[in-house]
Length: 140
Image 1 (cartoon, rainbow, N blue to C red):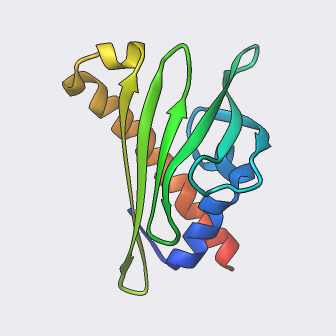
Image 2 (cartoon, rainbow, N blue to C red; image 1 turned 135 degrees about the vertical axis):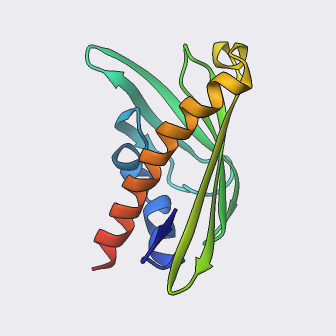
């Protein structure tokens, strides 16, 4: 997905862990953000679901290249864990944002890839829309 926002502006949203539930579909609230977010090893302590069926879990940074990419291990038990890769690249006067995700552990991994990938794609498309709106809104 492409945005008019610069890579710096998009990275500022990704770097603010407290904004995570505003752009990630399914995340409902933040409980805490490690002070060194988004450096490798840092965690977001979030909740997911709809009240009263809310579960607490974490998302951890596996790799971070400021203004270029962020690799995360998102935990959402009892569904399992996923690896999420966000990449940023200049496109015209804006930024192209790519978001790739796949289940890596737990029950979500039991679903065949051909069945789970379209579901993940729909969810991530909406997450990208939200990320773009935040980056563009903060850029004003």
